[in-house]
Image (cartoon, rainbow, N blue to C red; front, side):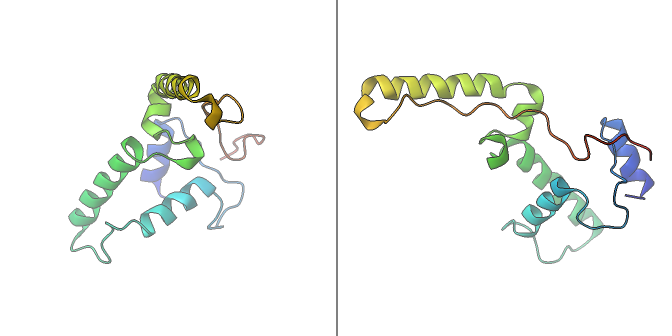
Length: 132
């Protein structure tokens, strides 16, 4: 987290860098999860032909990751939907569909189905003040 460009990009998006455990590779579980997702993405080339190839592939991956990939940790919503606030409407539609299925075939359910609640805010070291 010492690269000035990265720190500036984070700050521009209201993200505070964690300095709680300097020089520890797994300080940020969100970053570690993203790195693993990239590593095992089937479209990730084993080698990049150039820096531009790497940048183009990464830009495309990040676009898909935020706008198309439904994350299990976000109750199958996309990060873009959570960020833009449209996940509320998606959850309402899901609940309407569940209500419809339940009204048509209540014998298929043990209880009335409920769409998962939207995820709340999250972060790391939220109980610590930033002293960067």
